[in-house]
Length: 448
Image 1 (tube, rainbow, N blue to C red):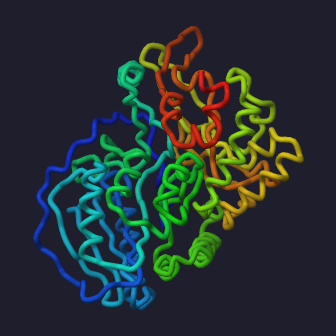
Image 2 (image 1 turned 90 degrees about the vertical axis):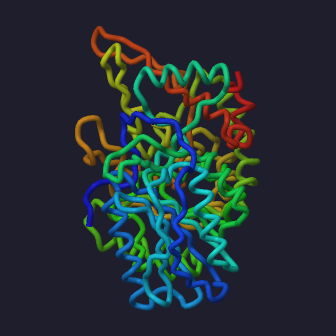
Image 3 (image 1 turned 135 degrees about the vertical axis):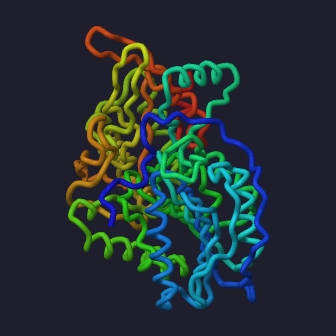
């Protein structure tokens, strides 16, 4: 068992530009494609980073499940894992555990590599149904922190070209080591991969931190029937694959939820309360239609955040901390992961909320309700010691939302008499998300 927070993208990363797929595919294939399976669960592990040993632990859990007939006979669990060892695809099914294919060193955080790998897995393992697990570090929809010089350069370039990208998922260091950086992916890249793959998923499970937000879910709503994940950090153990295997193979949301809760209820006390929710994507358009006029109404003046937002439930109060090269100052405590249900419950009238809330509950029929504290983003001094508490149980929805602030593109940081600017570009990127239009933000004061 790991006691560290596993899936949140580390702060202060120096990120690079994604590179193309340049490696040659191995010809060594252990072919177990004798028939079409009922369902194949595709697991894409980007673990050539600080999660390398955690990946090995989860592979052992899957081997345990395969060795004890816990995987249905008509299901394959096919895992692409790129950690500090050689990238490989491993197969777990009724025959046990085996290595299906190996690769030379590659950048698994490159969307073209991801597409080629998933295509190969789907082609060689035909199935009536597919599901997808995305396993790595995660930070939600938002761009990650970089050095001041990089942020300033990207921000200025984005004003001319609109080219700024978020780096929301996965880290590949390209060194077969446990170091973090420099390559990552963004939500729009994953959407592109799944569109090109042409396979509709029964579900997408984010085994990564902070990915269960309305912005991310709405972006991927047409790619899967369900989206499973946490709006905050996922503990070091991640998904309990040894007990969840059957639920994953059956696409049984209730069974998957039970596997999580049973496992974590028997874990250390600080691991028992992390939020987990199941989004039914077919309900997201109705939720967006109901949300848009309310966002337009209450956020009509972008310089005046509605009263009540400041007291809404947050999932990660120290989601980012950025040092400015000039001021050597740090900015902390700025949430971009509010609870959607809580924000709406705080700003709407009782009548408005009463009409809106059933649509959120239809979209999220399953969720955990933490009774105590859960792990959140580490603070600037001590990794893994910051906690968050469920302060608004009445309106809690277990899905995050972004509430823009005027300085989320360029913010001024101060440290005593020192002052400097940090170029984040969050609002610029937020306007490129599908939720910007669908959720009503484009019709509010933020369209200026």
